[in-house]
Image (cartoon, rainbow, N blue to C red):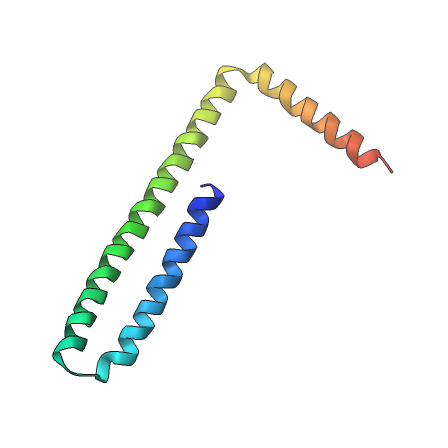
Length: 99
């Protein structure tokens, strides 16, 4: 997941939490207008929860697909992977050894 997706999910979770708190606070309120607003809010919450679940499942599926692809590439080209790992290790070693 990228940063924008993570922040979107966090924002959506915050909105859902705030809406749930608002519904709890107004539970004792009565009246036709309050009932309509509560019904709309509850429907919006159901929709938001479903959307969050879809986004999360989609992100998990994409991460799994990327991991499988990476694993396949390493298995198909092991010497390339070893070379890249050695190069990265060398660069990290040089940078860590600098004072």
